[in-house]
Image (spheres, rainbow, N blue to C red):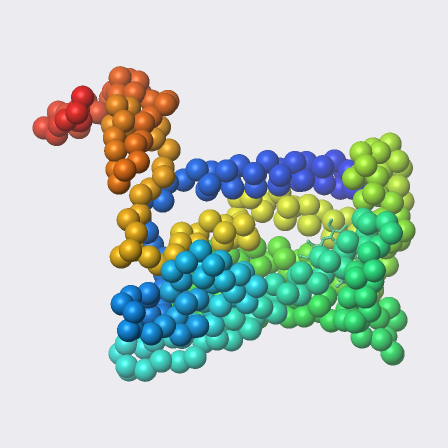
Length: 332
Ligand code: HEM
């Protein structure tokens, strides 16, 4: 029974929640208006020709699409903004380097990447040669049987370091929400159970692979059959991983996709050269029912006119009117 529940039903539900949730949030972000130009920058922005910019300035204060893309890639793959992590003490007028956070962050994320790439051997047949190669390169052989995967242990260490930061540093403790702790604890539980399974309580990896491949090909009958033969320790790991998947769209872990939509990261700093016009959905702005022209572009609402808007929010609008505010736009 455990096999059917945690090996078949729970993972299917988790994947469904993950896919629907992630798509929903991405579509929502993609449709959100960005009314202001808000790139966060540090370097010299493009200005008069005699004001020189270094390569560093170009990535820190990008002006063109390419420079912005470069900054984005450095952010995604090297967490560049965390390399500026300095702590200021205004009372003492001093500052302290806090770039260890960058190190912990990089350690966690790259270990996770390696662990997940290596996990592909559980559901890909044949296993791609680069996955085999990666596993070889980062495994520590010799006295240990099975060989020790460095990333599998490094991820646990990195998660503990990130968690201790939230527990033992007073400022970080104040800023931390229960959900911050929860995400770290969940990831710790998954990675520790994975390591336990590899080194102490063995699970039948052939059966695990068969289960995953049956699930992926929707061969549910066979999945149910195999699921019953796998050891409970696997279901501890698998159920936690399924939970992570289902929790993902509702959590801060969505930053994995959100970074691409962050206006502070993805906008060029060309405020002084180009006027920023928000390409928002005209449906949000009833005034646009008639169509207005901003900077040569005409926006006209296709979905919502003033009457419908008034009908939708009659109570609130009347309340505002009673307070002596004018609610009907001038143009109407
Ligand atoms: C589809 C979901 C997953 C399945 C089926 C799965 C399966 C497994 C299995 C069978 C092992 C034992 C490997 C061995 O004995 O060589 C393992 C180990 C491990 N798993 Fe997972 N896992 C899943 C998701 C995850 C996730 C999301 C993480 C990380 C957040 C993770 C982290 C680990 C770690 C750190 C190990 C220790 C050994 C290593 O580094 O490969 N697993 N997993």
